[in-house]
Length: 299
Ligand code: R5P
Image (cartoon, rainbow, N blue to C red):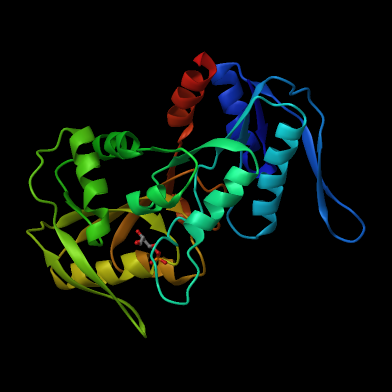
């Protein structure tokens, strides 16, 4: 099996190589003079299983590069191409709204047309999105990683809170992995208004120390609004755990002044912008991917 990794994921690929013994494939993404992309595959792939490690997050060039690489691998005779997109961008575009694009099935069709036989991701945004995707999609749970961090940082006694109803399942998976008694997870009701996100709640009992768990920190709007409510409810200490840290713009930095002590996120999105005094801790998804690649190699 040969792993073809895009530049931003090279460190992850090197770690996966030493952990699994998978070969690292060589390729180049280049442009013709007129700006059109092309791919040069420099390692033999005929009759081999190939794994592509990268992203389809903006800029859109990354979608083209990943899909064109997959297509080229198949054209060169690869038996199967599996795409590992640790963060599956566009997965939030999964709700039917009149006149608005619905990216998940569209993206799935592109993935399928490019010859990708299976996609592996971490913490897919919704089951609904998975059902819209025409290619088999494996979503790896980060619950074990968060559970370990909770134990290591003495946070097992804190109240786990979901910033919206969609996050309740994630919170419950982390509680289970950490051996915390199930019980009903307190949550917020999230409302999208013309002026942004607002929350009502929390619904359920919360203590003085809280851990908010969600799949994505994008602009931070959701968590900022939830933290404002937690402050009003008398919470003194907040920790945040998110699978995918996008850290778009600067609004998320308001989390610090709202009582957030630390943000844990995985390395599904490479390179957290801004160091923020070590208050952002990255948990590696390599153990999850390693398990999956070993299972693939055995097939
Ligand atoms: C929404 O359903 C997601 O689970 C996240 O809560 C949301 O996408 C986070 O985005 P932002 O940080 O921009 O509020």
